[in-house]
Length: 311
Image 1 (cartoon, rainbow, N blue to C red):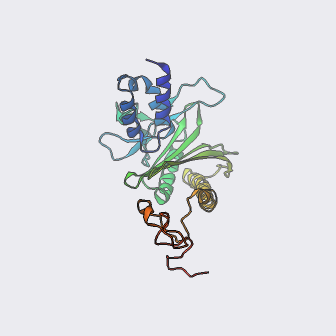
Image 2 (image 1 turned 90 degrees about the horizontal axis):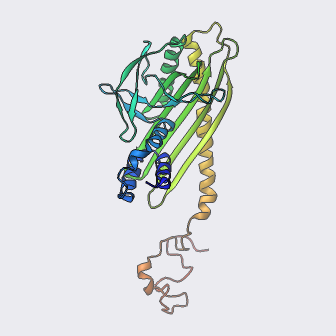
Image 3 (image 1 turned 30 degrees about the vertical axis):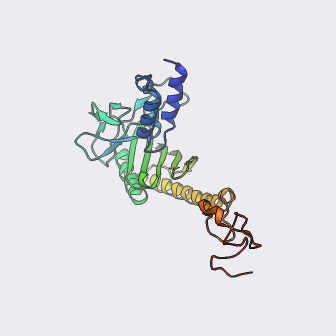
């Protein structure tokens, strides 16, 4: 099996637009009929896609979505193995949380689901953060999934993950919002940083894709001394909500600039009639001298037939 084919297909899988992984797989199958086992050989690509895209699945017998996100080791421990997160997507006060121990990468279904006991001193804070984050997401994102869990490389640091998918294939577009935050609840100097990723694909009569990422620098959080887990969680989520609102407003302003600037320059201008030219009838047009020269007969060049005022 040529390694370059596996590398190319892996790139297709890892770069699949939101909600379109199944379409990419179907196309790859058609293009690689002579290599029927090719997809089975690129499992790491599917795993990487599911982890980086915060792919969500429903647990058997549950209505809750969970994410098969791996929390990577930090730079000080680059050898740390990637491990699946262990958290529930629904607010809970129990320390036992449901976990995806294995995930079938291609079909994106949970299997071998087991319970997981959350062994951390921050269990109450995690529950409060999860509840506040779920409230925030329900107000601003459709069908969002929230996760809060300790990071494997640094159990004192908590990962807050939010993913929201909105698919509209009947209208030829799909989109995904992902935000990831790291919170260290130090009594004196708590730290909160993060990253926001937006991926939108529009493919009606064309192929336009927006992928954008924003690094969130350290946000000031008041010292947690004397604060209850509920109060501290509410403060953290307020910071997150303010950052995400600001980024959405920034994106809207950017879209407006593109629409009136670069995109407007790319559009094909309509003729002065403000009507589309019916090219199949091009032979019936005549020039503005009235002669039937087979070009613009029936309509004089520069003639306003759209009901506008003449200049």
